[in-house]
Length: 368
Image (tube, rainbow, N blue to C red; front, side, top):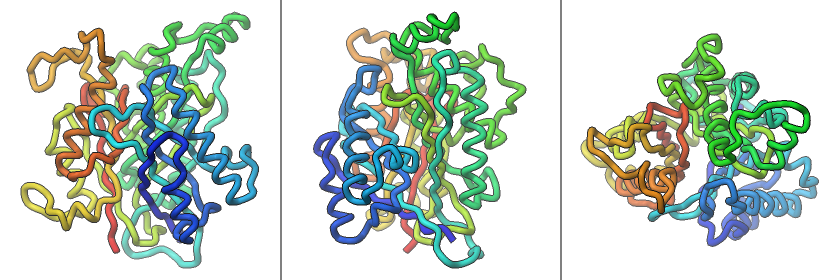
């Protein structure tokens, strides 16, 4: 049996370890059981957002001091997925996932499990390509087996942290007579996110590998995953993968469900995701029901045509504010208004993560 647990802690800065430390000090968390940290940091979410690396360094160092494990070994065990950008009312925070094998066989019912894993490092010329799609698919399939997830329908959220291209990495490729998908470092974030998401889609049989051409990545929006959430960062060269689902190996403490937002204000999808996770309500959820929510995870993206429900927006034409940052703010506000908590995880840049202009939304709830 797999004992998976989830904790949400507030952060006053990217290196604020007080929330995690309180859980460790009170023996609520054994730091040796941490397998993933999913955080929202208060940077710009773009290429030069170093709050992501700063937070990763802080968490790595903290776990090193508490376990005696080397930082290098920690980075090979714990997936640190830091998503930059807390626009609007989104509150900076981290979600700590612990998981360990315990005695006991399969249950008759399914409940929440989490597993994390890693791809190999990617060369600059491999980033945002079919090479990345295949590598991510292999890791997702492997983690499903480890988690005892028997069906792709039981996978409800796959969070990935992927790399991006920098000037140094682009020049490295050129020095070896290799090409890259783009010389625009910001656009490279989208290519990496998109390729990673398509890897999830392939692993979960949402898209066939043979149906994806190299030129489809970040162009053919009819190809997407309904559960992939990917975030790019300068602080790594591989992909870190966190898979969340329900399994008969789960310890019965939590349950996860999801749905897919068709646009950035699709509140009905948020409500369906809550019901899919086991909450019961008519209209809007009661305070008693929302109190069972551990956290909500969602992707945000501006539609490629700039319209929402046939209404023109300026998301793509506002030269002062990046459209990805605006999208994060909007989706967070929609979800926060329902759960009455601005501390929910919303990541921008949803290339091949849900339909054009939309994105997956997942909810973890307490069963006990």
